[in-house]
Amino acid sequence: MFFTKYLSNAYHHFRTITRHKIEVGRLCFRCGLYSQGIRHDLSKYMPSEFLMGVKYYQGTRSPNDAEREAKGVTTAWLHHKGRNKHHLEYWIDYSADRNIKTMIGMKMPDNYIVEMFCDRVAASKIYQGENYTDRSAYDYFLKGRSKTMLHPYSAAKLELLLKKLAEEGEDVAFAYAKKYVKAYRSYKLRKLLSS
Image (spheres, rainbow, N blue to C red):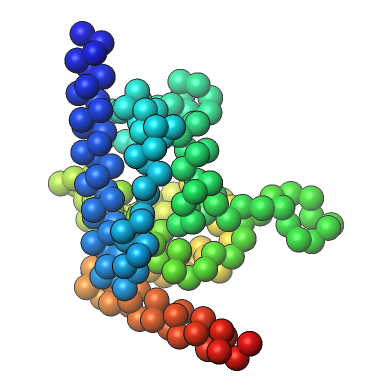
């Protein structure tokens, strides 16, 4: 019985994370983030993440939530966030201001903000299924859970993309994100050439 459930969870978890990875890749490609789309979330297939995902698989939400509820900590998430730059938690560090002795969100590079946008849209599509709308990822963002330590610049850019999607639809939002990525690349190239 246990082995059958484990195999079933392994199959379904693999299928879920692969569907998510493919969807994020597709969305990243729409924005011109080809290598990021290919590399997105590869750490989810590593044993330290995959095995916890299988153990806590439910199909309707992230296994990380169930692991956190069961153990008080999410070892898979701790591994994941330290290896994937599209997560705001990757960019949390101590403030450079010596008077502020706390951890704060650092400004994320624009290409990772766009990948985070793609990640949130794909996660909403996968987990909400038929209930997904173009407002889903924006509504999740507005709940505030993901804004707590996000740098103000990063939060503003992410919110702009999510709001465009919610109010103007996928074609407009992803066309805007693609222009945003091109502008960022041009800026980085100009900066490189001037140094």
